[in-house]
Length: 177
Image (tube, rainbow, N blue to C red; front, side, top):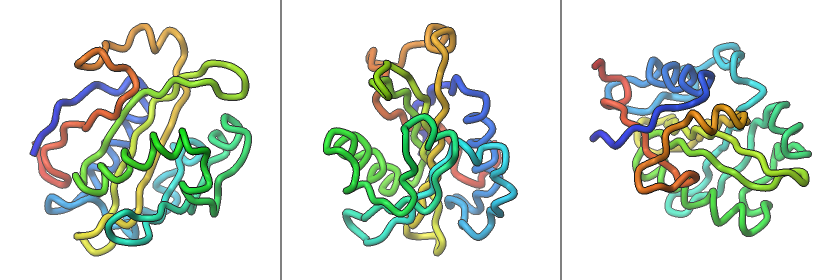
């Protein structure tokens, strides 16, 4: 199944998506054990990894939280869950993460909000992973702050929305074009 693709403005996110695709096999999201920590070195400061606990409405637990995210948002979330976030953040992230689990495909979006007293925009990419090839039990999330120039150069998303999640076109994880 293919979905509409919006080009990623952040080259690091494009690289991470390409890496994820190389680790996907037989139409399935990558197995977490196929990704060594050293493989993620180019993105390590800007990623968070979630363990997904439970089947239907899962609990998302931060098992890794990068240094750049800690600096950007004022604290590490390591060991916390989405339930520990303020309600407005949880209401934004929970449905997005559940969509990634259900669809088993990456999602990207630009999110603009007030962080640390100033308005900032981050491009985000959420990538599913599956230990057993069936259940999505980890999410790899990357976020990079965008400059005003990057924001201005980015084409508007379909429908005119600038911060909603956009499924990315992938042939099928692991399939060649």
